[in-house]
Length: 242
Length: 241
Image 1 (cartoon, chains in turn yellow, orange):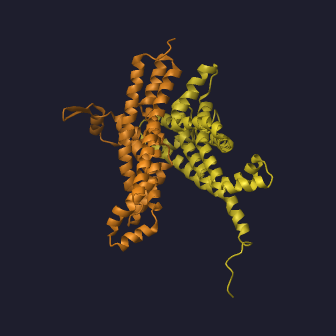
Image 2 (image 1 turned 60 degrees about the vertical axis):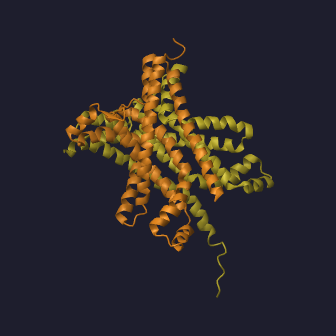
């Protein structure tokens, strides 16, 4: 096989028509992933805090909404945002916005439960400690519960972001020129190397996802490690015998 | 504009739902078996088997299902000999016990392979977590009773590991139903594909996607209900001991 043919298409796979046109390929995949990761983190935080603070009755509609987003396929939600919003509001929704919207909502719904679980896992005692110090519920959440909960929630966030990177490939369905889309374009143009092309594209995703997994885990657990490292020398160890 | 979908289009959606269920069910069976084998391989005595299973899980978990499906559909088709492809692309009917079983289309086969391989990686992780969840003392207890390693695994470790991994396993089955929607990208006429088709033909966006969404929610809800029943019976059987 001729590797030169693939090599010629490499820039197109990585950045699309970038210097002359809008970015595409792996670069657009990254943009999509980062945007929806941030939005889903915000939504998830808001949802989780709302779940933790809401009373028994206010929680029911919230759980229903979150359950809805967790029960439907990402693809269905992309259809809803891409095809229905224009009909309802008579605005033209670009495919990019529809995908970011759908991915953020679904990611946010999953993360809301992780955030809620993280806050619960910190324990009732911390709530009571915060409240007995004279903090309001909001202050106790902000200064006592959340800093501890974040450490517990880290793995869920990283997992969710990795699956988000993978889900950006669904933008293919509505014709957004990200990595999977340009891969099929290149495949249709060359016709003869589908195995090599899709293996290569899979490899790019693999690198992106594993890098994100390792990097985010390291970065997010660093603060925890630093705190423990600075505490360690002060903490009384087992008294030495001599 | 008509208020609701004509029966013909509802029928399309219903048939699509049937394909979705058939695909998810057959992939669930195969993925559970493959995932189980992978989980065992990660505990194998041979280092090569452990590494191979680990690499499989990393590779299949960290690449998008869509790319995997495109690979199976477009890529493997060029690797197979022409004769095999021709056979796969033509319709076949098997007559068995008075039933005429139609051999599925190549799209279905590619989708089934893709979903199976992808889901198996996740199921392997759940089984492995279950195996890790069985306490060390149980292994020792089985050995002390004079069971061989194989017997200990079969009668002591495995039943407990399966109990631990049942709830997340059902979560994976729900994901499988949802993920099966991606097979529309390779042209399999399942529920999402049918919804898109009905929408194009009738312009009744809300109705078409609404019905499809409700059917997905119904399928996921049924799996959730089954998982609750299974978990309840599991807890009962624990309580009896």
